[in-house]
Image (tube, rainbow, N blue to C red; front, side):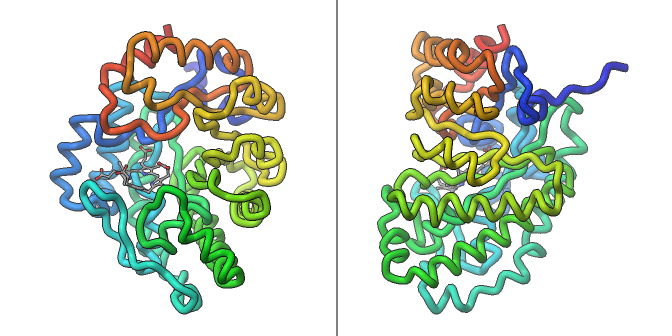
Length: 341
Ligand code: CP3
């Protein structure tokens, strides 16, 4: 019997795979009618995340439809604040909400019960791995400390993360303490996901792009380096993808300083710069999700450009951020066909 190839793992190990393996950020989500159905049955979004059978079902939905090369665990980056008892809830149409944290709240955080709280997610990882086709890579994930902290400080999403930036200037010590707690928990959580069957993990720093130079170093680079060091010291074979949205020109330095195996690229990263980055190691991205909404020529042209500039080196094809609820599932079929031929 031929050896089973997990192509995303091959790219993570530095190989060029042609055509490149494909998965899409937020591939399990509201653009899929079958997701909306399971989501409605689950009741709340967190119930969906914490019920292993349902989390497994929605993780597998996009794999059944498109045979993507990787599945990503269905969960959310905000399950860590939920485990820290920040009263997290997802309000239909207005995104996540939680109790905003202050200095006293940071001092009172109790990380010890969080991993236990996340047991259902770890159970889902094992279940998903046992149901996935052998050749499909399973990705675990968590949020980066900075991005998770922005929601914890504001108590909701914002467009520029002004509350967290301000908190960092006013209460630097408490803020660094929060980032340290999140980094440590995230590392333990990723190790648990790897032990349960995740082949590799991705760390999402979706709000890295709003930071000034010094803050990028202190809030994005250092906590990410800390997590990666911690995971790799315990699981030396672990492969880690870092997605720092909006980090632009910082990405070369970011890879070197954090030790990430693959760098995720948002759609604003120029492909000439991405090609340079690819000389240092694998990259993932970076199609504008709006091209998937548009479909047709805009979609084909965006794909072709990425393949022509990055397709001759280690690349995992992906979007530059999550697929949006208004994307037509048929356009994803078009995307997969265009890449695989
Ligand atoms: O990619 C996947 O398919 C796996 C699942 C996944 C979700 N969230 C499911 C989800 C992943 C990897 C995430 C990560 C996440 N969550 C990030 C980082 C990546 C990014 O998109 O920037 C962030 C910042 C969050 C926090 C979050 N969760 C927000 C801001 C929202 C509301 C915005 C929105 O899209 O509704 C969520 C909710 C959420 N997480 C949904 C899904 C499918 C939609 C909620 C629903 O189905 O009711």
